Image (cartoon, helix red, strand yellow):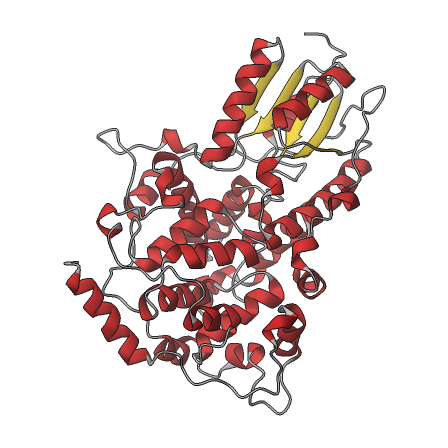
Length: 474
């Protein structure tokens, strides 16, 4: 291998400099390094909010690379392999390094790329970094994969997690840089329309912001995390899902910081560590059972008579945050304004859609993919199937969250509901008013509207769901 031939770092969901094994290996080689992002068919097909957030992340990471004397090369090509071949020809690169992804489409693409490049005499090497534990390395005592979270947690909680790598002191630049697309020409936020300006102030962008977010959480919030993480009206969570989704921080960095907090006597840190492992569990399942992304994981649910008609009035009301159930509506409105949703809210809106309304979880999965800036394929799929009862380690089918009593329990003073619901308030919260600036104009909604009556009575909806389950023999 020529000591002067460049290494292409093919970036995807790893927009950071520290704890980046692929980048670290390239820099250690002493050879020139060319970071590149390819807007291929898979990234071009992203829904509105994730694509918008990716565009912001790329812009920010490009600036961070420039501070190191490097730059981010952007190429748009439906075929990542064709784009890489073109760059190899233009730069004389002899190696391509990247961080692994685990969804089936990415695995198929990356396998094809690796095979083709190796056949052409190019070093093609993938690295870890998006997960703490490679999915194929965690096995039950009988050699199978885990289907339940708690045994999975017990299996990995005492494993060594590699210490985070420092950011490179230097990224050697090539003698000349290849041409790059202009990010503005990609118009990554186009599908967000006017909602982009509403969501943007809530975005915590880039590696430095992610590290600050983690530090503040562990310093001021993690001790009480067991309790506060369930209170949507309290700023008690890490909010790191946004940054983990694009690799602006690594799970290893979060894990080791959480372990330090636990050793300092902050008991809530163990729950934080469990949440990190819950994310790992989602990827473990996606690797071993990729059907979790688009089919009922529990096969006995395949014949269940879900409502799959998204045009129905109650589905429209759910999407618009107009179900007449304050907890559901507040959570949906939070998502439109911030691009995120509190975890307790996610459980409530998912349970309501799949149980009270008996709608297929794929409707919700697809809508979250459209609206969440922290969208993650594995976590989104597992979360929806967990709530619906059709997934692994799922909430029992007979457990139907009551969104009214849940609000009484977790938002007693109505801080959360009042922040996001404007109707009926003389002086609505500014965030509640922002909702009307974010939503499509054709919804024709204003803060002066009357708050709607429930589209489904909570008690009647629960009875209907249980009846449907019993008729299926669950």
